[in-house]
Image 1 (cartoon, rainbow, N blue to C red):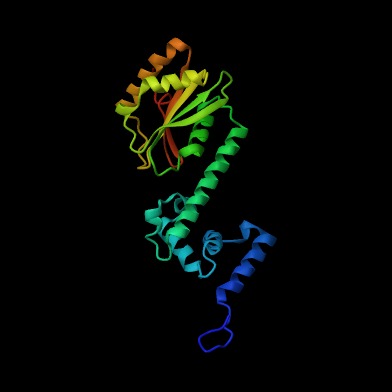
Image 2: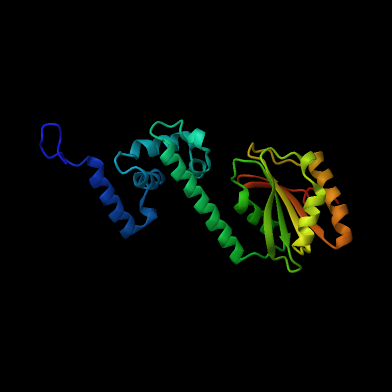
Length: 234
């Protein structure tokens, strides 16, 4: 490649830096890197023509943790200088791959017999989501996960959740018990009267078909609240 004068242009300084990073990663692994360097390495593969160290540092300054970078929505990511549609989409693809990996790992050990396992499953499934979701997790008689499904996405409005359809789906899957769960991206995990009311309504409808509600859980990032643990009855 030549410059404007016709002379052979030197490679940008960061090209050699990337080669050294690649060799270092292959020989020493991720433990040899700072967090921002791992992020820089990923971003460099998204846009190999630019020095991505300043972009990686800017992302860490804004979001503080790798998790928050990955979980940030596209609009927030693009507020960082140097982040366009292509890089933002690649970061969200990375988030999707992580979520799939977590889900696959959970399905290798899909037996839920206590509150801590239920919490780990739910947080792995959607605890870091920036979109509010109401999820149904159906279990067989041994506590094995049959299926988990999003009942409602967006602002969870208990008034519009169709209890009859939920019960119909649980029955069709042949569940023996079910976990109700929803997340609050705002960080608030205290149960509302609507949460308790919906749980009791569904329990009343499920009882005649021999299905019990294992728990109703509320999540935000790594925190959760169990209605059962709070003494709620249904």
